[in-house]
Length: 472
Image 1 (cartoon, rainbow, N blue to C red):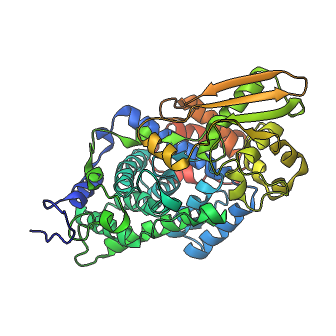
Image 2: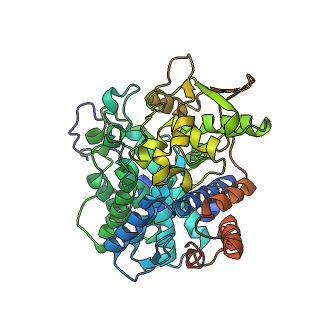
Image 3: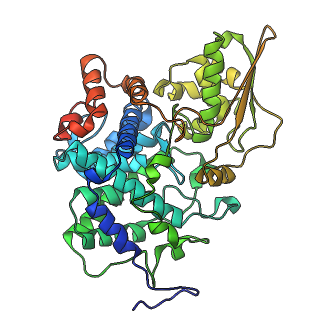
């Protein structure tokens, strides 16, 4: 019988055991076809977003640090660079790359794909697992990560973002696929989750005020640590079981508004991976809809940068309308700025890392265009409220209005941009986006080979075959 340490604790629970058995027992054949297709699209998008980072300093730093962490040689590939290192070194590098352009997914609680896909890929590559094994690990990770993250979410209004830290619970995005692909027993998976809980940082969002590119490396740290959690359990440890259950239940230590019912809510019935948003553009989540609208208006009306007098976003998003006339001091500061990112599109409509190269952060032409991006009259959207509404299936309705120098005015409104879970990209659209994303690293026959292998990854007998293509 469990001893209930916390006031109000109810019956003995078995959440950790249930999740551990789910992770271990989930088979490719158990997963609905549409869920597998979504996992495939997420994998393609995340790998493409990682390759797109080639050309900006964070890529070289991530590669160097991956080699430092993992040493030379090994069974896992550093994306972009192509050299081999250990799994922990590879996932540090590749998870940092996956988040660097802010071009991966956005779940209800953060960017799980930046951990899930690089970890699943490295473990599958090193273990010579099949594409079906790879996809199964991705699905298992989404279902468990999202439920653990939802159990510890902050309240409806987050004072000073207290309790919100998407790179804290991100550790479970690495623990789960590593444990699955290392073929751990349910008991050892249980312990790996325990290591994940005790290694989880205090949820905070220092990057929100610091606007530092360290934010992207946080994803690399969580992936490396998550893999080590699984390795620790594999090596063997006594006890260390049932961390999600009383008397030491994880959610009671991390959250001011814990909800343990999320751990197993509709597990295996409601596939939460299907409610994940994928970014169509290399920009923060809340810039996606304005970017999509700007692209639509300019494309339909054959507008160029020389036509634009003013662009208005209504309603604006609080903390995403920052404009710095002297220039931007970091990649992250630019990515989180709607004026900068919309100006990047207007000046260069093909997305990629060149939008965020160091010299562009202070480019006079781009900054002059960014100054023309204005807030509409409506009350600004608050991101905590937007996230809570996203968890309820709603998304902000945004209007973009462009006024040209010759007095014309064009306006469009949208709620669910392409890549929203209810307006998802098709396989052909994923393939086309991958071509755009991967262009800084590969071209020609090798690019097309990578596209087709990822588009049919379920047919791949050994993920190491794909790994050897993902370099410049």
